[in-house]
Image 1 (cartoon, rainbow, N blue to C red):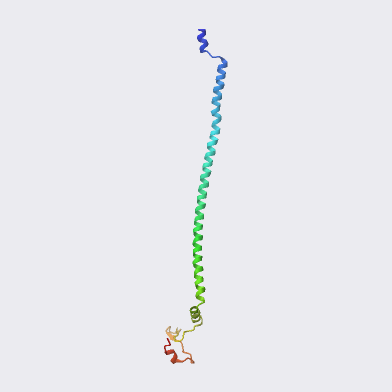
Image 2 (image 1 turned 90 degrees about the vertical axis):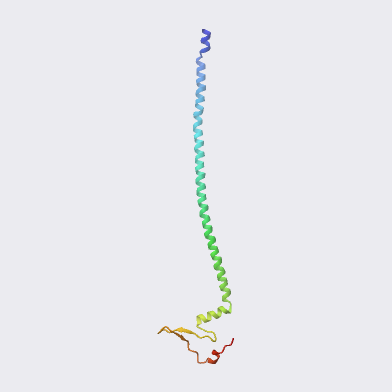
Length: 144
């Protein structure tokens, strides 16, 4: 029985060494848990930061896109205005423009035309008096 006791019994040193091994084995996962939690926290924080950055940049890109469309619209409007002004400049150098301006601004009329104006008293149309030095026969003839 002594031999049987000896096989089933463990020494105090064995128990202490086993408890030290078991304690260190239990202590290792406990030490790894804070590191693992820290890693997960940093990964999560990084993901949130990346998502916020992406959303912010997407909004900024949308704003810039709208601004670009507005500027392109303004540019097109300015180009149309420039073309219109260039046509006006070209037209202002023609005889037709000079004649039109003289007729409009100075109340002149072409030869053979009759000027009508509104009478201030009754609102009826009245012909302009024919100047005395004009040839009335020349006004009636058709020179075309």
